[in-house]
Structure formats: C-alpha cells, structure tokens
Image (cartoon, rainbow, N blue to C red; front, side, top):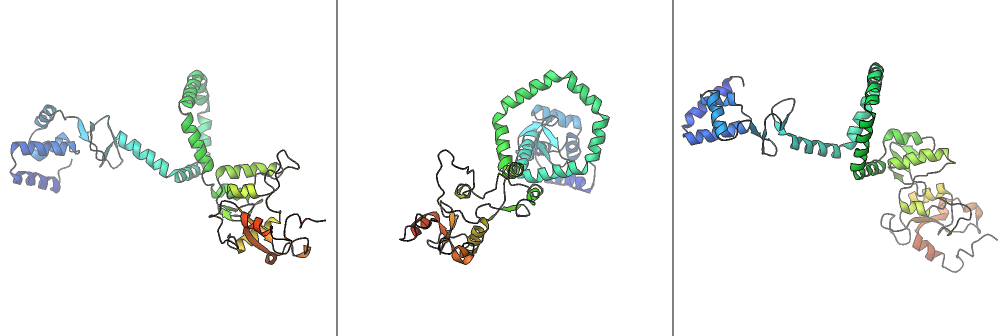
Length: 330
C-alpha cells in the first residue's frame, strides 16, 4: 500500500483514539481479516512486520482472510480468486456459484456472444488449426485410450444433466436467424411464425424449426402448431387414407386460409359461449352459417362463417335440419 494522505490520516486517527492494548489487537485483527496486509498493518500501528506476524500466528490467523461475500476465513493463496481490479477478494466457492447462476440466467446472451466470436474469427481459427494440426493429431494418437475412457466416464456420470441440457435446448425459443430459413415456406416475421391450423402468431421452439426444415425435403411435412390442441384438431395432421384405428375429425375440413381469417376476425373467441381459446380445453372451429350444399358459391366467404368452440359446434349441428348426416353431398 502506498503512503498517501489517506494512510497518514488513518495513522493519526488510530493514535487519537487512545485505545487499550486489547482494543488495538482487535482492530488489527479486523483490518487484517478484511484484506489489509501485514506490511500495511505494521505501518498503521507503528510497529514492525515481524511483530505483527508473531501476533497473528499466536491468534492462528496468519495467512487467512475473510471472503468479502460469504465472510468465511480462507487461505490467502489457495482459497481466493482475484478480479482484475484486485479490490474485492472473493473465495473460489462463491465465484463458482456466481458463474453457475450467471450462465443459467444468461444462456441466450452467451450463445449469441459465442456465435459472434466464431463468425468474427473464422480466419484466425483456420490459421491456428493449420499451424497446430500436426500437434493436435499427435496428441490424439498418443492419448486415444485415455480420451475414450474419460469420455465414457463423463457420459456415464452425467446422463441426467446431458438429457436435461438437450431438452432445455430443444424446448427453448428459436433464434431469428434460424426462423428466417423458413421464409420461403411459411409466413414469418422476425422470430415468429403463424400456426398451421388457427393462424395465430407464435414463437416456435428449436426442435419445431428443425423438424419443419427436415419435413420440407420429405414431402412437405412437420408443420408448426401453436399448441397440442391445434395439432390434434387439424384434419391434415398425420392423416393417411384409411389408417388403423381411424376416427373422423370432429369438424368438417375447410380452407385453412378461410379458417385463419375467421378466427382472427372473431378475436379467437367462441361467438356463442364467449370463451377464448386460452380458456377452452378444446380448439376452435370455423362454422358455415349457410351449408356448403345449399350455397356452394358462399363456401369461401368469411361473412358466411362464424367462430365456434368444439362443444358449441356439436350443439349447433344437433338442430333439426343442420345435422352432419343431412348436410352430406348426395
């Protein structure tokens, strides 16, 4: 510690206090535990460093210091991690807890920073790999067995953590760059996409986007839905001609664009019971006021349609003359 006007003021203040020996000893211990070195203590109290060390050894506190966060005594050399400023001393346990909490709360920011780093330093990474390619190959050839053993032990001991990490990654919200890859096949705005059944805007998950990109190559499969209800209500989801255990859909299939227009117009609420899609346990249907058989020209007219929930839709078709069997084409 450099001798400045502040250290001189501290020295004078300690002298003016007129403390007893025991009080001075307590003050010295307090200063030392909270980060003041033995040299600084000797200067402040007007003694030699040897006398300070002897006193600290007699109290069994020499070489120890209190953590600024948890307050526990730790070894000065092995128990602490210093920041760049070297003002606050935090023990290793507190630092590890802080790092874990930071990574858990800032996963998206860390991923973005990693992507930026890799994208901005592609040339440097290539140069480094080309220069050290032979060293890397030799290291892996000489230590194949040890590397395999360590990998097997790691996978055995961390199965649960790996599965949790994979599930969290799959269920996390997709990035804008990944969602924009579907711009040629779906209606996209930023990192949002429209549901295939109801047409509401939603933020897809990572696994939904990857499955959709794979499904584009496999006969246009893997559509994205906002909920499990929309997925099950959609008549085209996993439907094959005459499958085993086939159950007919609860609603007649209509034009998906027409359905989306009508649901958006009615604010995604049933026009009979007044419940919204979030309050209902079942999905919403697009109901034709005048049936398709009676007026084929008005089948795609939004003014001829109304939004009903599944239960209300069934009740409407129980009215005489409006049954499902009576409206079939002859």
